[in-house]
Amino acid sequence: MDIKGQYWTDDDSDGDNESEEFLYGVQGTCAADLYRHPQLDADIEAVKEIYSENSVSVREYGTIDDVDIDLHINISFLDEEVSTAWKVLRTEPIVLRLRFSLSQYLDGPEPSIEVFQPSNKEGFGLGLQLKKILGMFTSQQWKHLSNDFLKTQQEKRHSWFKSSGTIKKFRAGLSIFSPIPKSPSFPIIQDSMLKGKLGVPELRVNRLMNRSISCTMKNPKVEVFGYPPSTQVGGHCKNIPTLEYGFLVQIMKYAEQRIPTLNEYCVVCDEQHVFQNGSMLKPAVCTRELCVFSFYTLGVMSGAAEEVATGAEVVDLLVAMCRAALESPRKSIIFEPYPSVVDPSDPKTLAFNPKKKNYERLQKALDSVMSIREMTQGSYLEIKKQMDKLDPLAHPLLQWIISSNRSHIVKLPLSRVRGRPPFRQLKFMHTSHQFLLLSSPPAKEARFRTAKKLYGSTFAFHGSHIENWHSILRNGLVNASYTKLQLHGAAYGKGIYLSPISSISFGYSGMGKGQHRMPSKDELVQRYNRMNTIPQTRSIQSRFLQSRNLNCIALCEVITSKDLQKHGNIWVCPVSDHVCTRFFFVYEDGQVGDANINTQDPKIQKEIMRVIGTQVYTN
Image (cartoon, rainbow, N blue to C red; front, side, top):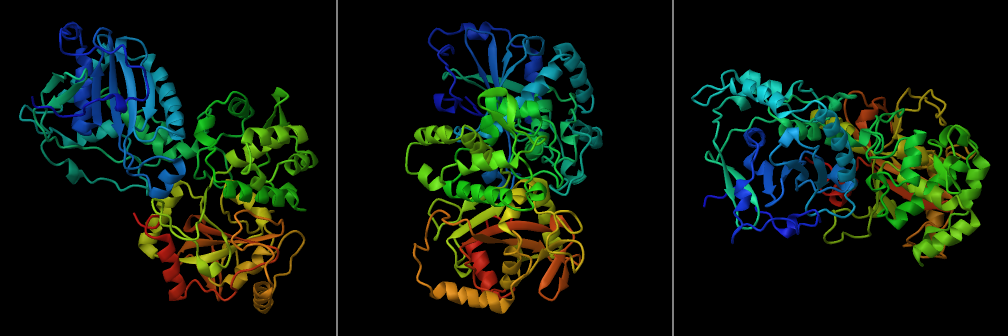
């Protein structure tokens, strides 16, 4: 038997109880008597024409009028760092499993939807968000869908083809994806890709003895004219695709539109986030009160944004940043966003409300958060009970600090770990507290890559006091010149200030908390030498931060276009899309790194590229 497509086994399932499935073979011929709606076959054929034969799998149940249609969404267009931050496998399709009535199809009940990756069943938060989105989409479409209505749409499509199988008007085929958004995120496929013959194959259904069926075509190779998903502008990713190629193609196209922009929409209400500097990298819940209540009290979509897998060292850093911002004299300006936390004793009210800010109560709750070091040494449930006794708002606040972080942060190991991304610490930075820091959303990262191909890029430091990073991780690195966020002045004009020289950025990082004089390079060198000659009372390889006296700087990648203004060793980039954070370094108790580092030194550049590998910076 000429079998093409996919075989199904118990391991391929999403964990459903499949005991009711009919076992084909032996005396099980009644399945063949079940009526199969022809519109379902037509829609399956359309998916195979437009995508590929492996893009759809079908499974019937023997004695019941159900059929599972698995649609395979290719997500290889996601960048490696985005897929890592979203915890998805970009090398494996996302599967949309829809269960229809076999005999009624679109005239039957609304289909159930499951979203999963076969090898990524744990912590697949993106699948929860996508399932909710596609469920809402299907419910809206089901109000007016019917087999007869869809049949008229398909008849229009078949009229485009001549009997010889060539496209009558190949440009007409473009309308199935109209409007095609022009985005710098993904290349636009030229019309030449459509120039070719598209045979209209005859559908053949093979019933398998392993209780599955696989749809195959007599023509094994079909010219595919599909477009890669594209990051949409504004709400265009919510445009309803055409029905001319059937409901299955429509929902696949809609999923492709939504996936690249999931970080731009609330995981609960699916409304677009409203941030000063646009979206960030990780999906999150919005600040609307109803969504906050749903997220924290009902657990609605909590798996889509609140990742318990956040490393303990990263949580330690997030708490330190929150504390620094809260204790700053400028907290009314820089402590943004202010927490939205539900009162555990009264789930109908907010204990911490951005509309009614109470910094003293917030400080009390934060002081009751036990050190992360202590949390890793005992039972988490017992530690939570201890925190609840100290302050019932301490643990909810800690949950907010973790879940509100919208950047991807990973503690860098001292050396490369087998089986993990090829990152390790930069030895010349002289601190054990080094982190990979990625905050740009997919759309910004794509624009950055496009500009990088045109103009090239280099690395430079950005110094900012640790009190500012609570906001930066949640709102992005913004151009603060001539705004209330500005602290250091803008002597060289408006933009993000950078420097290839570490001593300059170290100086900026020490400014804050009332300190407004930037130390000179000589002072930094003396401090560096003094700190490295004093015997250390604790191991330099300490896992957690042990002081509240912290300095930090970021290593950024910046586009070297004519927009980058160089005033000696002080650079100003007025285009925020041209600056992306890559690494983050933290120093304790007045320590500083080597003040003589110059990112333009070939040896330093080689070390950066050796550490970073090619995973993040190449397509």
